[in-house]
Amino acid sequence: MLAIDTNIVVRYLVGDGGEQFGRAVGVMEGNEVSISLTVVLETECVLREAYELTRDDVLAALRKVFGLPTVSVRDEQVVRNAMNLAAAGMDFPDALHVAQSSDCAAFVTFDKRLVRRGKGSTHVSIRSA
Image 1 (cartoon, helix red, strand yellow):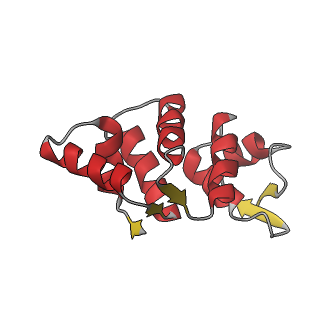
Image 2: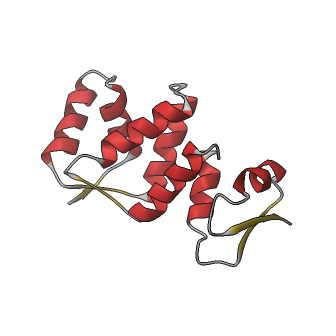
């Protein structure tokens, strides 16, 4: 199994980068690969910020990658929970933070918008500091 970097995932998804796209396809489809939480987070950020994809398009792209038979995602259930929270309107980075906190009594933040968006949407309580 190979651990892969964000640039491999992004090139595979967006198809740019010329010969790097072909190499990314070879890595992603020709090997068993592992994608870490940090690579998932960075991929979401790059697709949203640099490529200006919508939340729905980013989530669809991540689902495409996660559906490949050669791909394994570290902490897959955490990532899927975060994707569900993001699909319901939470920002993906916040959703990932919250999804990783399911074994805690609460997720505490100064972000009032996150507190409002998180009410009733997750098993962990989200509250203001």
